[in-house]
Length: 283
Image 1 (cartoon, rainbow, N blue to C red):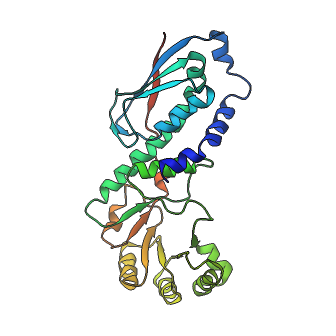
Image 2 (tube, rainbow, N blue to C red):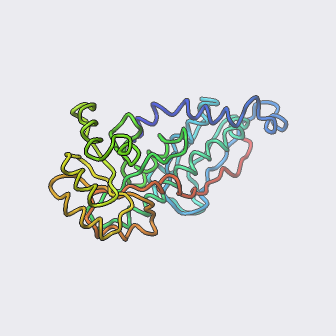
């Protein structure tokens, strides 16, 4: 997920978030600020981490009032430190106050994911394993969360169900087995699509290889079983490890030799990076 794609798709999602927060009016702001006054506020980092989502932060204010100015002192992907000033927002004080929480919600969430991802990527240094995200994302936040994974140094797995074929346990059950599921997928899918299948044991691994799967996901296998599966797949299929993998236990699978590790924790378990809009003053 790159910055251009995100920009092309983010406006309606940001507007949904703004409408969620302001259903009719910002009654608090309107009670203390009855008319236009120009002001400025500082975006301040409250803990160390990787910042991600600054264009979304800025766009949130522009969608309320395009005249709002945001001056940045950092860019997406930068390592930022506690108490660092990241930006200054200048414009109608009513806009700053009304857009503050929505803008920060995006930025905190995205920066938290980028920071968590970066921590996991560092654990993989020295290996050839690539880190992938999953579809375990917050509803309506996927485009932002997958972008944040990339900013943190990770890689994107398929974006949605239209993006790639991944035969999981229930698909295999519906098709009547691994071989039949792969056969049916090959018959249905365009030839340009690779076919990935999830396996839980070495027998399923054998069946997937015989049926010609392009990518084989090793789901919740022990490290010993994964090592054997990787040996079986060598020269025949790409391997991906998955199943409750977090930064706490990822070292257990580095020695297995898998090509990819996918982790839902990158998006569903990353804590936010704490940032605040402070020091509002009238100009």
